[in-house]
Length: 408
Image (cartoon, helix red, strand yellow):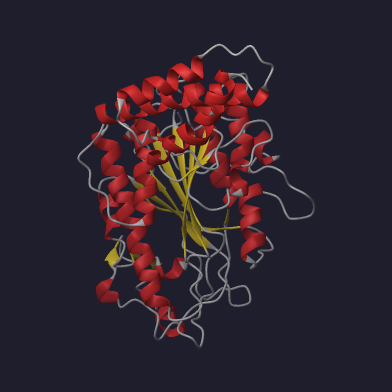
């Protein structure tokens, strides 16, 4: 083994550890350093995993049937944050209430799909792929959008998943890698010693006469990692805001998204998750905490985007795989249901309630009847926000919804 090869492979065992890389191959960072995005629209998707109880999120506080079906679980009328004379937010959603007052929140009511599946996994698969589970599916709706957005481009960072769990099928792409990262810190140099950084760079850039794919990989990875790590630190520092996010997991993820957008790394789609909405028993305290985390995190995210001058470029969409049944169960919780609201946050939206709230008396075997297919929301966002061909991505032309003030 030559001296250079030994030194560089030693670098791979020590230097890369210093850089803090984990499961994601760093090659793509070299590309993103040269792919400043400009001013393209960006979509941030928040997955509310577990089946959010839409009835205790958007509350029909004037309807006696709501209080009849939920004698212990219904939110008292006096506590509701009123949207209008019929509906209001759960009192934990003061973050959403502030967003609505600021003209930044749209609530699409009665969203679902035909022949609903109450299995978490299968229903989430349907939302991720826009297809029934009749065969192998290797990509998701956002993965197909990423392929379309990145067509002809060299960048591999059109989409990013922020989190430490398994990457959601929604962002699985046939032709482009979608990296998952836990935080920007994961990719920052953990040494500030200039001499150490320069030594690592010199070794990584040294001439390699051997046909050694591993060595080439290590050299390329190290060089690009150093370049991008330093770029991210420099750019982030120059665009830091004073926005203080809540100390919650979702807020931390959205703060990371904001930092990445500010760094102009070129991603058009970001995906984050908040878990815990499967509230079968003693729902009230858990659901209240989740809604507070959601509303406060999005409100902070919106303020951060505004402070950084990025608000008009970013649309945030929140969804859950299904809602809950109308009646509470014997454990003071709710079981898997069907239709539920989706939430959109952005500056060009039709704000307030969009579409009718599902009837509480005209039910389908105890479940709310949906009236808006979730793929209509997807299609409207794809066509009007990301400028994609939704019919190709969704394999069908879905009717658009009046979600935006004007077509973009």
